[in-house]
Image (cartoon, rainbow, N blue to C red; front, side, top):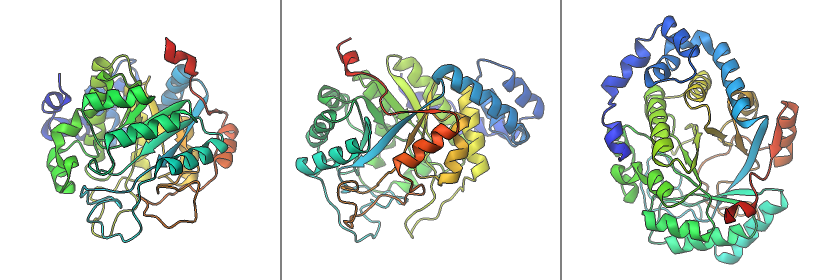
Length: 374
């Protein structure tokens, strides 16, 4: 069953009353349950829940420790191309962004240099990223990059354009473990307004990409909405629905959720629905209670001091020392177009110290390659 058919059953008109009309009694009822339904999630995302953030945080912390222990996995994004044929109005890589900085696609030897630099920092998990340029940055090229990265890292994931199931199988054969793919916005009218050109503009093809990856044997699926494109409550209700759908349809894959928030955008785009810090905290807590066994990823989009405060609220994986430009680790001085500005500029070592000071153990390696033979 396609998730498109699921989301069509939950339009804005049906979701809004769930959080706009929720009462304190609804919030307390949701807090008292072990298995929450969508109405409960709506209550936890409501204005009425704002005065319940402390008990929500206590329960979120308890559930996270129950399922994941006191560990935070570390990963690094590795951009191998900033070429892009899509016109996503909020993105620095967009073909019409107006940015004049250099656009490149790393050759295999430069990919190796990036891998060596990241491995030298201690990383065992890497996330390979590209722009939306399937004709220039082909499936075969990405598969080759995965195979190279697998020589250096135990865990290799990708955040690239949506592809067919057969293409995801090619990635898995090359050594792929995970696929991160954000719907950006689940609200189809808004999706059409912010994705003006390129294959990414096809909403129906993108919305089922994670499920295609799961069917192809991808072990870890990561989803999320780009917060700020549309109202955050509806977006997170749809994320919750998507998460439950993938847990049923792709039960052999683990699932994680990311919370990317628009903070810096090209001049031509202003954030339409600003998500405040308190909104993000409430959203993370609500989803943790709704999806207690799902991983939560936190990137360096957020400021260092804010990231530190979020650690006990359900986070299970963090990036550190990140670069959002191709060649950003081996050749840090080269001026190449970056996708967005990094807020947390700390080194991996600094982030590790903060994680330990918070009472958690940083984990560089999530599994052993021996499991590949199971």
